[in-house]
Image 1 (tube, rainbow, N blue to C red):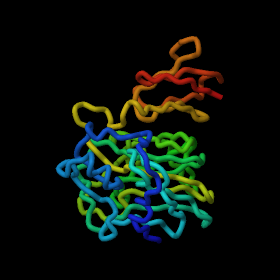
Image 2: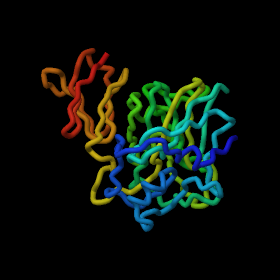
Image 3: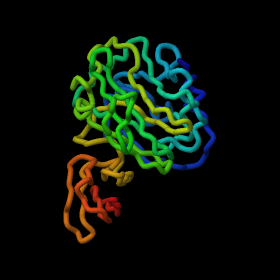
Length: 299
């Protein structure tokens, strides 16, 4: 197990200018933060200290980011993170040892026991490779852990299959994944999700990327929060991204998706973020979320 020195990997600044990243989080629509990873500049500029219920970001004293068995190489973070701060995010590529994983380890009690189904989980990710990844959140020792795939196809971890939560675009742009904690129960083998023990120690968040050497993944803004003022989520609507995979049409940065034939007939609709396309004939469709409409191809 290899400890990653937090400031070295996460805060290398090699990009300047007024650049704002896709998937920017709207901090005015959230409170009661439980932080796992968020750069200090973004936190200081956007979150009042009273709104941070628990801070478990790495400090190299009682909270650490460990890469397991040299399975990733930390890369220099180039360009802005998901909230526009230069260089302040995590960047990894998979090594050649046949597997990969890392975890955010807390040794003093994470104090995340206030998290319930009224909270949401947020993470920003970007990549240019098509590999599936797994995010693991919750207290595994208590049987309250959710494990889910970020990718087009379920992740196979030595015969254990983790179902797809969603996918991200693979164009090197930031995507926000923002999901209700109530929905995470469906990705738990026990049907339970959370951190009921306030003194829980160990991995509060883990990540797997498989065995393909060179697969890349960048991560940013990992936290739980409670929406305020009736907000559905904190992702700014201007950053809605709609795309298709080989079997779904998905929206990131928004909720509520309608799919129309090229002649304008409604063929699929959800209040959530994803619809299956297995029963749709191949062709071009129009996908709409809020005011955003894009053409998608079903193969």
